[in-house]
Length: 298
Image 1 (spheres, rainbow, N blue to C red):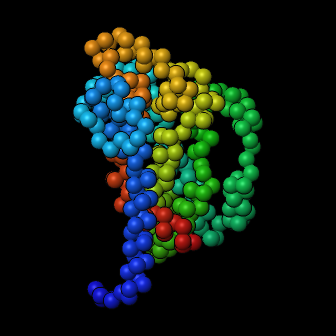
Image 2 (image 1 turned 135 degrees about the vertical axis):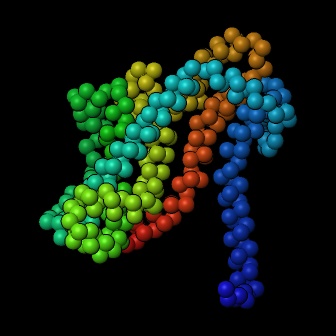
Image 3 (image 1 turned 90 degrees about the vertical axis):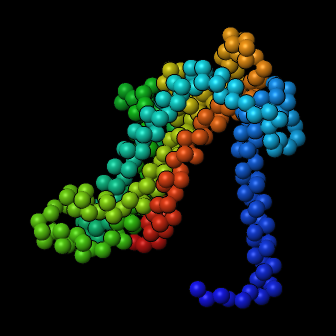
């Protein structure tokens, strides 16, 4: 490696950039860290949970609020519905988006520009909320998980990203497979998809995080409380300030009455964040490669 001697001006710029990055990291992490501290604070309901200043560390570490949250039934039904929605949404999105993108990656596809233009059109114009709602209801998907996963199954932006990645795969690989008698389906499954793990993992991460955090469509299309996703449970507690169920739960568990509603809110927020924190490190290694190749080439 060649060591390049930096001028005083370069060192000052580096110092400013490091300082700026440090500030951004602290501002980004502090809200998350506050929820961790409040959820773990075992010093009573009127300590960190009601503090208006900086909360950096819990006075006493306790997992009692987590134990109490485990007994909140709405949390687990929301968890299950969100997991089903996320897994189903990722599988359908990756499958149908890649199937749509593969033909478009072929420059000799008849009317390729027309099909690409139609897909681009959907990025600019949509049917609107009310027509979509009526369509969901007429198709019999209202109050089911299909109302949450089918409308977003194919994203035009994701199709273009995957199409560009497919175009970066050397054509000689497909030509040699075709000489050996392989058809398009076999080439797609046995050659193209295994070579496209970075972009498929990236799309899976985008779609998965989107489904995990989504709540608006669930509020529109799901009226049965048993079918509501986790984010709607959080919204009910935090935004609508509807903590009746939690209050009843705390009253029934008199030995754990030291916990405040605010502390349980933080605990439930942590429950919703932890799965994404556990999954992200395993997909992150594909993230940069998948986005760069898919966005630049083609």
